[in-house]
Image (cartoon, rainbow over all chains, first blue to last red; front, side, top):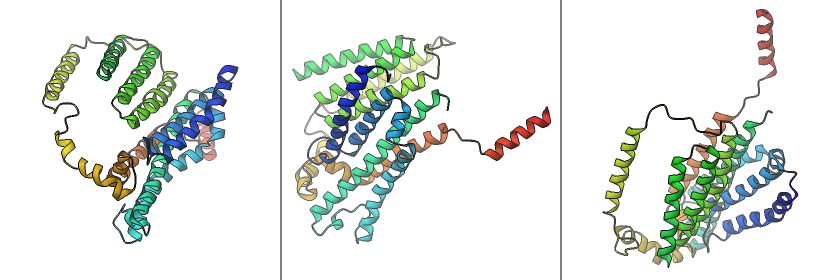
Amino acid sequence: MKDDIILRVVAKLTMPFMLVFALYVQFHGDFGPGGGFQAGVIGAAAIVFYALIFGLRAGQRLVPEAVVEAMLAAGVLVYAGVGFAGLALGGAYLDYFVLDHDPVHGQHRGIFWVEAGVALTVSGVMLKLFYMFAGRGSAE
Amino acid sequence: MEALIIHVLLTAMVVVIVALALTRNLFSVVVLSGIYSFLMATVLVALDAVDVAMTEAAVGAGVSTVLLLGALQLVASREAKPLHRPFLPLVVAIAVGGVLAYGSLGLPAFSDPQAPIHTHVAPRYLNDGPRETGVPNVVTAVLASYRGYDTLGETVVVFTAGAGVIALLRRRRKRPEEKQRKTDKEEKKA
């Protein structure tokens, strides 16, 4: 579809908004609807959209497969790491109260990193699935 | 008005489902399931579940439509005719559907404040959540903090699903020495 000028222009115009919306959903999740899962899916959908219009190779140049695979595992590790941070600071596993001097700030910090982990894993899995399926039809 | 909107949407979803069951063209099936997901997302917005609506629109209508189209590229675009007349599955489906409908009659009325789900831990989350976690959005507080273990499990499930797909679909590049051995064998055969 990369020869269609309308699609190319529309994709280039909407991509920044989709990515910013994903970040908004991620970081505004404490106050409005949203959170890591939604943000990860929206961000991945933006990249999939880009790859649909400019081709799989262009998408893979933008977000290389190695990065995607690292994201997949890094998200779970970040989430589990927050739990171990709580253990190290003398609390229970996934206890956020001990992450800061002020318990409420500790909660904020814990929720922030947990949501970041969820977003990483979810967007990594979505992108990886797309890459695997889209790459299968075409010969290497 | 809200009830009217939801009923119109649900009726449209039933129409889409019937069309889905009847059509044999797999491309229309993919498009119809995308339409179904968008209708579902709109119902969820009408029910004030914006989080779930976002997920449904992005995953159900967006990414999975793309994945199904990618899969469609690898197979024929028409569904094969079934070998047998599917009477037994039809009976089973109708029976299970009937049992589910009967079971739903025993549920508390929609948005009944006295329903067990609203009287167990929900009041505590609603009353103490903002003070304890400092997060005004109760959904985020419950998901990430009160139910942190569940969400960790969910994340691991998503990770495992991704890892499973990678394990199944990744093409292994043959190592040069393996290739060499193969050609040697072929030469011997010749």
